[in-house]
Length: 299
Image (cartoon, rainbow, N blue to C red):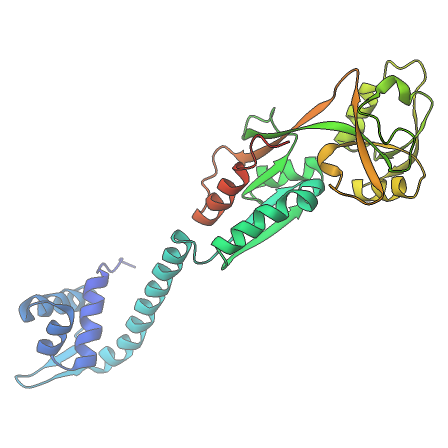
């Protein structure tokens, strides 16, 4: 079937002329001369191969096919207008949806204050937060399920741009009643032989802990193991052991748990913003990304 070619101006000329039943009134509405308007309608009829309007010296009337086509033309113009308004709304951040993937500690302790400011500035933009493990955050960014991510892994992935935001130190989480709670630092060597609360062996945090304690003459024992940091903190609060956790995972001002920096060696991790290199963000996602970037240099 040959492709029928006409433009929106011709379609609009037909609709307005049919509604006004007058070339003169339609021309005035569209700010065109009557001959220019007539030529637009004629080009549309030529493209379709049918007459849409019956013209007399006094009036303009729709043909039977013209009446049927008028409904379709109105629907097409309305759909185009709605699409243009949707794009305009997104460009001007009046609406939209952003998906951000992040590790749970970011979702709990860092992201809420970012989203509060974003919600005030863009109240009609929806945000979906995927709080997952570091590997799942990276997968979500790579697959396109998330517009961008916040995690401490991904810098070595060639398809991902990793922008460093925050450096955080590893701390020893303990009850505030613990004998070490007032110390400024704790040596890794002092953990030898102690019972610890640990996160799962599948966690990147556990890998760093195992590496940091590998050379100790007596290994600390992961007596309790949890899949998530929240569970580990709950066990620490219950007095069941101490936990090595990144600073961001320790809620500030916690009534029962505090963190003391570990040293010799000092152990840090870098939280970064992950974005697929070939991904172009929507205006709403770019705006939220800009707010996240304001965290750069904290801690």
